[in-house]
Structure formats: C-alpha cells, structure tokens
Image (cartoon, rainbow, N blue to C red; front, side, top):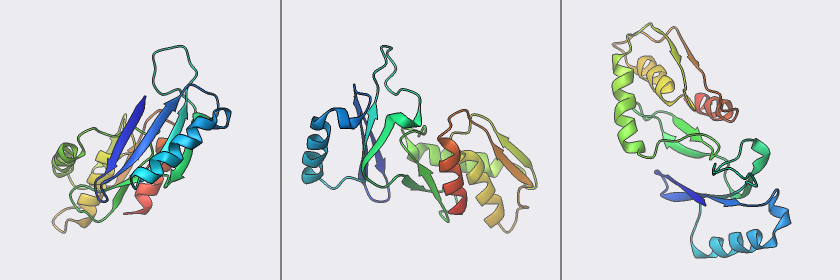
Length: 169
C-alpha cells in the first residue's frame, strides 16, 4: 500500500510505503526503492510504515511503526481564513482528502463561532477547525478573541502537530 499527501504550497508529495516487516532494516529492498524514487522526482518526504498485523488495517498503531526515510517530518498547509500561520501534518495524523474544500468549511465554522467563546473541539485531529477559529477571532478587528481553545483527539501523534501549528500562528 502507499499513501500520498501533496503539500499544496510546494506541490511536493509526502509518500508513505507500507511494508510487511517489523523494521525497514530487515529488508534492504526498501532502501533501494527509496534511492530509486529519489532519483525520479523531488519528494517532500518518504516514510516507511511497518505493518506485520494479520488484520485488514493498512496502518498499524504505534509511533515505532513509522520510519522517516528522507525529508521533513511535517507537511505544512496554510491556515485557512487568515493565511497568517501554518498547519503541520505528519502521516500519522488524519488529513482531509480535499483540503481546498475543507478550507472553505473551516472558514465558515470560524465565522460562526461567536467572539469571546470558549471552544472545545472534539475528535479534533491536529485542531484545524479550532486553530482556524482562534486565528480568525484574534486577527479580525471587529471580533473579540476566543477565551480559550481545547482540542481533543485519541491519536497520540496529534499533539505534536497541534503544538507545531500553534507555534506557527
């Protein structure tokens, strides 16, 4: 299996190769494939995800299953509405398939949250909706900033993405 994520600002692809091994060191063909791919085009990142589970899940749980073979840790996307910050995604975090469409949705959500609100985003992923609302109300002179924002999700990889995105505001 493969997963491809395009970083829209660079048009480069972050590629994840799913391999049936416990570690990429177990199979030298992974390194050969990565070297060959690097010669073919400029990649943003190439990851190897090791999944030896017998189930039909493509990605196994556990950060130890993910190995960055080359490139940057995060794919970055401009923050919807203000374009004054960045959202950071790792392949371990859920990312919408249609980011252009989701930007429109995030803008509408931000505009419909009353200024001065306390916001708790459940199943937040990296906090895209909450961070967009936070930036919108902070940068809109006709609005009151949010009192606070809390984002919650069960994926242990999301807080790293959220924290990196928050630093970029």
